[in-house]
Image (cartoon, rainbow, N blue to C red; front, side, top):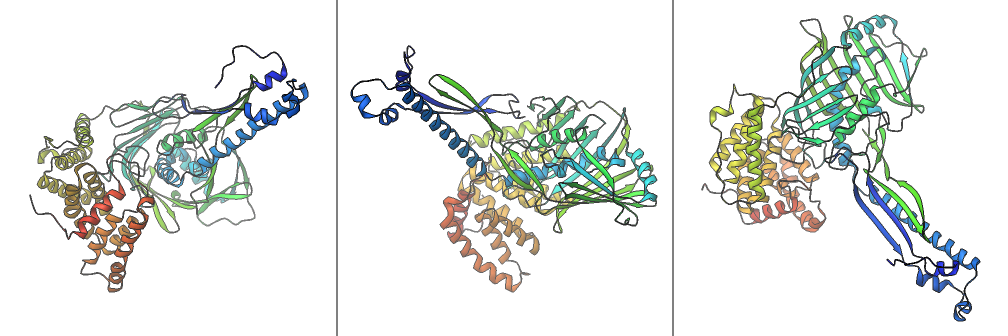
Length: 640
């Protein structure tokens, strides 16, 4: 771009020597990621070289005679330049918006749904503490437009006293808190990601909260989980002036940020922390900013044994909830949640300026947005309560369903109300950290494609009670991955046998075992090569599919096809075809399906997505390798 040494002396020369630029700088907005601060992340600089365009626009006679154009012509040309720049600015905004709209935000919404399901089970206690004006699951019915809600109550006077009594039962006055543990699981509606089972504990008071994950399944899947961060040993804490996230080594991965008065927006980047967005939003909703008007609906008759209320926004019902009582105690809450529109803001804010004839004009900020449907089709949320031996009535089970299918289920345990205690982070279990360090060493060996790796395995006594479950899992994971890197197939089989026993003992479900072996197989293909990858696929993954029941195996086949994991789908098909209890009609369909899948892969291989997960999951590479070995007639490796 030309830099003029001195300003031109007249308007005509000014137009002749104009350089016009349009600047668009993208600044990171208030975004809690690794750096936790404002920084430039992207910028555009579009220069419009206007000299030739201006010369071509001038009347030929005046220029040919060397006479300077008059000021009207100069002004007109300046206006034309400004108009052209405005046109470019408009085109730039349109391109940025189109780029933002082209992203597949469905995966982000599914991950947000997973996060909100887990967090709703935590926030329920604080919402119960204000039972008399109870509005549960605010994360689900807030539509990010900050429009007020209208609450209609179907009055049932005999239950008023019971509601007041339950409100005092759940109350969290200053100095009192509730602590509990819970195990929740998502079900496989998460597209490319694996559903998560997570055991965590939480602590809540009137102003502070803490949630800490202890262990999760599938154990051997390192990335591609239906949760935005590693669910093992993470902690998130929040309060009036803080919001912090700690990863499993105790390092802060999101800088402390202020929880302000401004309405939070859903602006998490595609692969990052919807967890923090949801915590921040709920903290805002819990304050006085959440506006709800209240009215009784005398036109409706009371539901026997239930207290009913509805939430409305813009004459549309958002939620209908029933509080059912038994023997004067709260027994069940059932909510029918309608679909909610979300305005998804880009995590990048663009600052635009224009400069014409040395005059800089600020065109303001531009942030692409996209309206999406959250909880499309609505949800049915069900909470069951039970009075304990101490007389404390507490929730024991929470489920979320859509169209009759379970999306999320959770069981509470060890619920205790009592004096508020410090919410400082608990000391880390040195045994878990020691195992995590060993696992990181294995990952480094995988990254470096080491041919030689000398593992230090944990002994059998280190993998069983009385060692706590989180430590058992961490140590077992190290043994399995270390055996994989060292090509110690005997020890790998032994580790997987112990892992399957662990999963069965905890009644988690065999599907989690299959997910883990898929993740392990992908890792082996990526870092150990085709031969070793096929060995794990044929000796470990194929038997895992074979051990599934007929219905479960059909579900896995459907999932794998939907995820374009064609190689694994073919292994599952072979396992299904070999079953003695296979339905004849289904057998015919499976026989037809394999060539169709092969054809689909060969014709669409370049269009299949390649997920950007660490530690493997290169779908097309795995499928090509499996097809190659199947066509070569390999079914299993001989013992080495």
